[in-house]
Length: 173
Image (cartoon, rainbow, N blue to C red; front, side, top):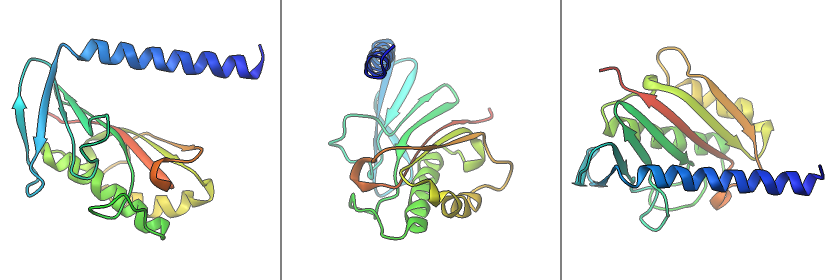
């Protein structure tokens, strides 16, 4: 199979999975509005199933939710380390990693979770030579065992980010 054909089939498959995911969850949606002066999330309306919310950092103009809570499992969408109130990436990669981790931590705290509740993390990085710099910051955010993680080399990321991280957290009941 030609390389271009294989890539096209993969892209079509990913798009199909995204449509299936949204078709499944549109029946069980709860929207949450985040009060930017508080670490708490307030529901706008509710139905059974899933809770979606946005952080003030994600911005209201982006076409995705910051996270989705299904039962006691939180799915956190890709986050990057930008300067507060902007979409500007700091010059220092370690500062970018710190801001990313702080945003992740804040998202978890809004739902009374901690970094130790993460059960899986994926990190995308545009420059794999920054692996050690990222890990130096990443290590400082956990008090227990580290969750399983993939550190994936990527092409360019939105807004000029060097790192983007997504994760899954489970709260013990």
